[in-house]
Image (tube, rainbow, N blue to C red; front, side):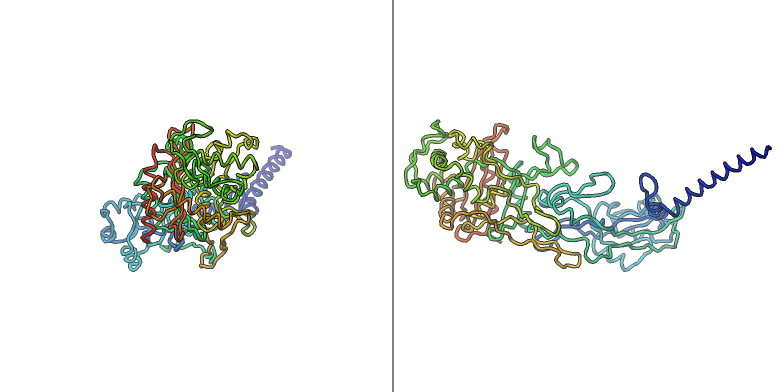
Length: 567
């Protein structure tokens, strides 16, 4: 061979060798944790190839109720079985006797297993504490009793707590609704709790039968979010709503003194397989929480007109009102005769409140806005504030703001003022805000923000952050006006012709509301109130968005009041 050709071949071989050497160096030395355009961690992939593992806890934080009872990530006793059991002399019949499974089925499952599995997944039921303890005592290699954290959707308060989903198909679970989404910065997983063991090319144990625990050594994480939910009350609320067939709407119950959410129910139930399914509602995804959605309140809004009229000294609320006249002079749906201001409120006479609203708006076009603000309906009412580096953190980021006027020019139109005065036209408020308004009236005008969470707690039980009760600093109604409103609301249920007389004798003060929505086939029915009247403890709103009558709504309210009085 020609010497020059030899040199060229040798040079090519040398270059190829250098390229291969550089490539090998890149793989083994330089880019072991971020190789290639996808930045693959070669060290982790290498370990994963020869490791079988089972996750016991994915490291995400969870939620508890006000009494520290777990609401999400429930703990379940279970037994983990590893594939290398097939090569061991283990008394399979004795193991199978502990479960509703035959010995042959257990042996076959282990023979076919390529990775560790949970016994509960095989028998389709939880493992009892007794069986768990039995296997702890037996200490059989390849059979490991564990207490696992289940990643399941919440069984109660689903809309309130929210859902967690793998949004990018990369195993990165995150909250997509409710408190799970709101508290995502605090709940994110930092590390997992796993059982693992090393295997050879055939899947056999590489370093004997030792299974290693890889856990979360951090004493602080994951955190626990302590909610305000009262579990027995929440369960009762869900049962009563179901029992009386409220298919669209729900219930929200607040503690009057501290404005904690004790129960929150939204219907329809979330479609877990497709949370954004709209077939059940026709217009909103099932994941939507109707207690946080701004909705037309109907005559509930007359409470705002009444508050303004009581503090408007130029108005004569002692006069008699002709309630045979409808809105803007039209024929009314009900002829109620001549009524006093109190009787008008109890029987929900539209003409009275249209007349008063128009008179006040003629004097001051901002008067309704003032009283919407004084009663806390002018903005969202959920707890909001700075939490560490998070500015204006919201516990209920899905809460919609109120709307009173679609356009400023509407304040000059007497016809639009009339429809606004009775809670229609463009008026939209959330059940949460209305419940808070009732709590404000019940507490003599004290305005506070609504809490769904009281604290974030470290893993070791030390408080990480506590959410204080927060008063709303904006203007408020006087204590005297609040007392007058309390009496008016009580007449709604106690007056023989009151629209809420179905609740007579229960010490409930409140206001009914019926709103007509052109888009809906049926009316919206509300009852918002507080109780007991003599010593208010609870404020509650029940909303039925899909019914011909308010019968179901009153049954729900009545049963909840009886239940709470018995506590």
